[in-house]
Length: 490
Ligand code: ADP
Image (tube, rainbow, N blue to C red; front, side, top):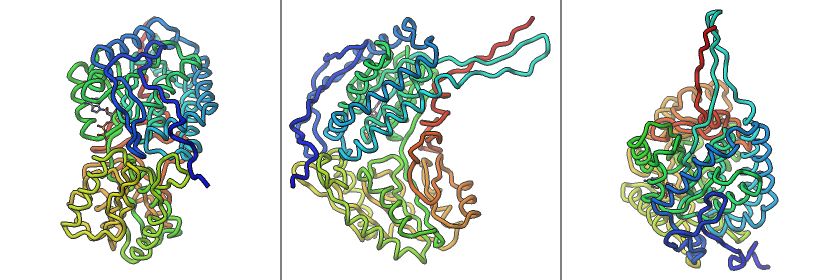
C-alpha cells in the first residue's frame, strides 16, 4: 500500500505577499525548499524595505479609514468566526500546503493544527465585545473611567515551527482587539500565511487590515519592526532575534512588544509520579514531537534517582518507535529537521556533549533520507550541569537526563539557566506539586502532563530570557489594547 497521504507534486503552491486585499508578487523570487526532501517547493518573492513600508502604510490607512476598529465588536467577532469556519472548510488543501512547506506531518496538521488555529480565532473573537473599561471611585463631583482602544498597526513576526498556529496566535488577538496587522511569516515557511490572509479577506476582514509580507529577518523583518507607523510588535522566535527586535523597534519609538522566545524546559519527575508509563509518554511527546523543534520542548529530564532507570528505558523504547518520514507520509512520527544547517547544529551540540563525557544511550546521529534531514530521538546521560547541552536551546529531539535525590535539589536544577518558559512536574503528592509550582521560575507549569490543553484560556509566555508578555488567554487580547483614563468634572 502506498503510504503517501498525498503526492507532493500534486499540490498547487502560490507564493507572494498579500497587501491591501490583493496578491502582490513584487520582490526578488527566492527558492523555498521542502524540509522533507530538500526539493524545490516554491519561488517566493522577498519584500524590500519599501514594500514593507507600503504594507504598513496600507494597514495604517485601513485602520484609520475602514470600519474595522469602529465596527460593532460583535460584527467583528462574526467575521473572525467566519474566517475560522473557512479554515476548517479548507482543511485538506490547507493541511497539504502546510505539510509540504514545513516540518508538520500532514495528518497532525489536519487533525490538530487546523482545528487549533480555527478554535484559537474563535476564542479571540469571543473577547471582541467582552473587554471594556472600569469606573473609578472618585469624588462625587467627578466621574472617572477607563476605556480601551487598539494600538493601530501591529507588526507580527512568526517562526517556522508551527507556521499556521503561530500566525493565528499572533493575528487573532490583534484583530479581535480592532487593530490592523502586518504579518511576516518565517522566510523558511511562507506558504500557509498567504492562504490564511486570503481566507480572512474572503470572510470579510477589510482590505489592508490583515497584510502579509514575505522576506527574511535582516531586511523585511527589521524594516517591519522598526517602521514608525507600527503601534505594537509581537514576535515568536529565538532569544537572540528577540533581543535584536527589542533594540531595533525601541530605537525608533517607545512601543510595547510581546516577545515569546526560547526555552530549555525541565520535566521534573518524582518517584511518586502517579503512573510512570503515562509520565514517560508525556515526556517523550514533549521532546520528540515536531522533532523537538518547539519552543516549549521539554529538553531537560530531571528525575529522582530511584526511578531513573525504568523511566529512561521506557523513554528509549518510545524514542525507538518514532519513524522518520516525509510529512506527507502517514508513517511520519519523527518530523524532518527544518534544514541541513539546523541538523548539523544539533549534531554539533551532541558531539560536544559526548566529548565532555555524556553518553548517548539512544540516538545521537543525523539521518538522511531522500534529500531530507532528520535527527534520531536522542537521550543523553552523564551530562554536566553547566555544559552547553544543558544550558542552550538545541531545537532538536535531544533530551538530557539529570538525577536528584531531594526535592530541593530538583528545584535548583530545574531553575538553572537563562530561560524560564515552562516546566513539567510529575508527582502524586499535592503539597509537592504546589511547592514546585510556586518555586519554578517559569511562565507555565504543567503538572502530571506536558502540553497545553486544547483550550486557550491560559496565557503562555516566558519569564527571564524566555520573553516578555503573553500569547493566548485574556492577556493576549488585553495586550493588544491600550487603556485610557478619563476624569470628568461636573
Ligand atoms: P531561526 O533562527 O530559528 O530561524 P529566528 O528567531 O531568527 O529563528 O526567526 C524567527 C522569525 O524572526 C522569522 O520570521 C525571521 O525572519 C524573523 N527575524 C529574524 N531576524 C530578524 C530581525 N533582525 N528583525 C525582525 N525579524 C527577524
